[in-house]
Image 1 (spheres, helix red, strand yellow):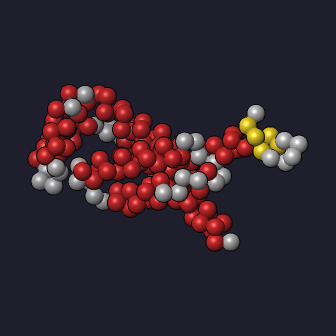
Image 2 (cartoon, rainbow, N blue to C red; image 1 turned 30 degrees about the horizontal axis):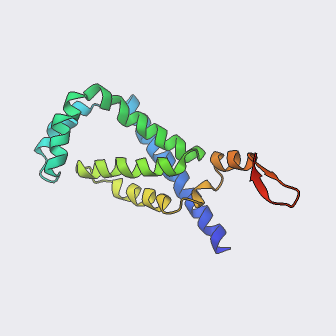
Image 3 (cartoon, one colour; image 1 turned 135 degrees about the vertical axis):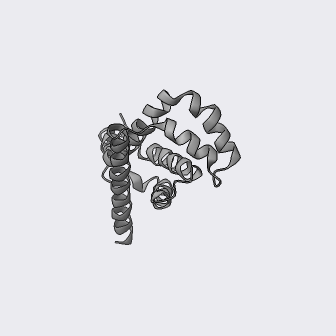
Length: 153
């Protein structure tokens, strides 16, 4: 009973985290998100580590168009992966990566809570498959032998 309850909790965290980051990605994609405005803010920020400021001024500043599209589309991909349960573990990993980048950039409003939920998802790799498309695809590839064991086709 407790195991079932935990599966439901992880499912709700997966769906909720997916919906939130999908919404954030769409808002960035349609709301005029621009990375070029972040570069001077992060460079003058006192709380960001110096290596992160260096990365922003020497990599991001020279590839603005790439990051302009990569950030919102990455968030959308993470959200869709979590909602539909396709590559949920990878989506959770990249969710942690994105949230850590936001924290390094000193954008510390709701991201610590999202980071916490993504870490919970990473710690529950097997439970992530609950009610996911990956689970149903994996199940359809199994067949029952004469002795009742499941094997791959």
